[in-house]
Length: 156
Image (cartoon, rainbow, N blue to C red; front, side, top):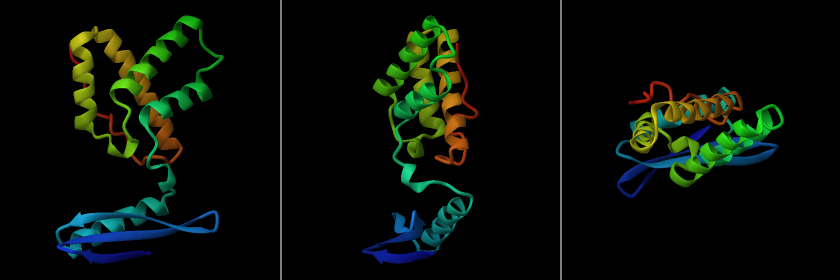
């Protein structure tokens, strides 16, 4: 259930849900009209209905990449491959460690373009493949609903 309120000159919504019997909410403000706030609240409610976990909205990309590595790659790869993954994860933590919900195709493409300025195409492709695998894990875990890296291009 959502509530729509006016806050000064802008509108806001608050969508309530229960997590382990505890009432929680997600909210957003800054909408110019009540209709915009209502539309955004409906989209958020739809995410809730398909099982999105709002408490995971603040998960950082680098931290999730490390978790993905520990779950799926640790113990199944060689030391050389492990070192490559650790390098990729460290670089992402240093240069692009933002919450998953803030990643857009444009931000991600800028990240790849910056990476391509100092690295070979094959290296950038490996970074991209690792991030894409992490995003797939995030979708399967219902942390995000779509892959913001889909459509990104690795440049020469």
